[in-house]
Image 1 (spheres, rainbow, N blue to C red):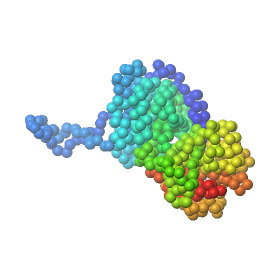
Image 2: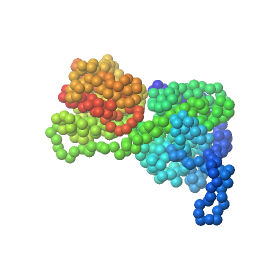
Image 3: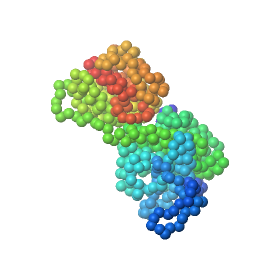
Length: 500
């Protein structure tokens, strides 16, 4: 299901299901539940207080605290000073995170805990707390500039921020969207398609039960929104209450929109599984090696233009430099180590005989850009496109846009014996990354599609990810080719296009 379809469903549902209680009148019953007591145990024998004496011996029956398991999640609140300065009466709850952590520990066979923290004392180091958890139902205070900068850096460094709207309140949702735009003015918070790994990392979730106040239960596709850093969902936001600790079946909340508790707990386990699996990728991403442009002139120049669009156009920024490096070392073509962002609406496309494009979300070209691209193709230009996570959303958008540019020339699969597959390396069979192996087997003939115009290929498209493998970073959810084979396939494509 595409993002536009999800957004339409979500908008229609939320428009019908907006809470009847006004913001000032709404009372959240989840806020009145105190935290559970810390786990305790009884000592097995009498003990003595440490020296120096005197001291009072500990009785055999006296309780002792269990050793603390490692902290994985930080539950964020605001300091009293921040609330005082904002003038807002903002509150949070802990009932959902307690149940979420307990259920996930049992499900995944792990042992971790959450800790309370706030923006003023948190270290913003993902190695201290890989996941931040945040919820509320009232309007958020404005984050100060230092908090905005620190949160951005935490997420860029590999941290994950899980946010859900307690009772699905619109005042919280609106104010959170406002603050996330301040943290990431250059990245989009948007719904993900139903084939995203967040919905299958542990449980296979195809639908969620949701209830508006006292109304009947409805079944909708799972709805989460994310901000992506690379191919990783770094901010995971649910505008509907992930009611892990509240049973809305027996205790509906008037004025609230809540997922069914059992569905929410499964989705919560998926979120933790996903965040843990992508942790190493997130930590490596910011520090990945990027090959800088050489200052020396070379005999052959291949400066690639990367097409800018509104669908996460730069999701694998380290991939293309790695590929150019391999072209330089494995062929006679000496390559400038650079890529140039190309906005098709304003740039001169003819400066680049070859354009590269990747993405993972829905995107749209304007009529003017479609016309410019068609003229570019008709004059000999070539576009190589890659679906960076094998996303159904990007795939549908790319096919739609190509059909608008070439209504009578469909994308068709290149046959296994096409000379492109053996142009430099023998790539008539390609090994797959782990996730793709689960779906398609260990190795398959590469799946490339092209638009053919009188024997020429102005458009070459890979629906299985190549550029994720080009990055050579540890990732759990790459629906594409294994790293080495993705690089070899990329070399073949670019060298074939360069010589044709």
